[in-house]
Image (tube, rainbow, N blue to C red):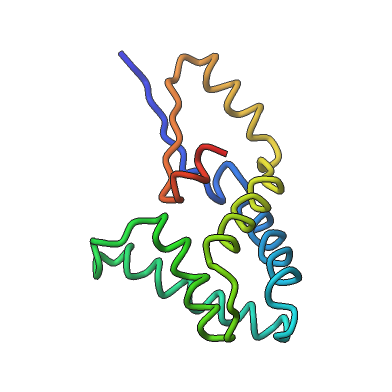
Length: 134
C-alpha cells in the first residue's frame, strides 16, 4: 500500500513569517523609507490580507497568486505615492524572501525519517510559482 504525506510549505516546513519580515524590512529601506515603518507595515498587512482573502474566499476566482504578489505593491505604491515600478519591488521582495528562507528546526530529520519509513512526500503551496522555483 502506498503511503503519501503532503506538507504545506509556508509556516509548516519553512519559517515564512521570519523570511517575510526580513524581506519587508529590506524593501521598506529601499523604496518606502520616507514613510514611517509602522504605517508601511500596517498598510502592507491590510492590503496583502485583503487581496489574499479575495482569492481564498473565492470572491475573485480570476486572481492568481502571482497577480496578488504584484498587485499588493502596486496598491501600496498608490497609497504612499511611490513612483517605482511594482515589478521591481516585487522581484526584490521575492529575492530577499528566498535569500532569508529557513527550515523550521527538525524538519530535515522529520523528512528523512518519513522517507525511510516508506512515505512518498510532497509539498503544496498557494505561493506564487516564481517563489516555488527559488
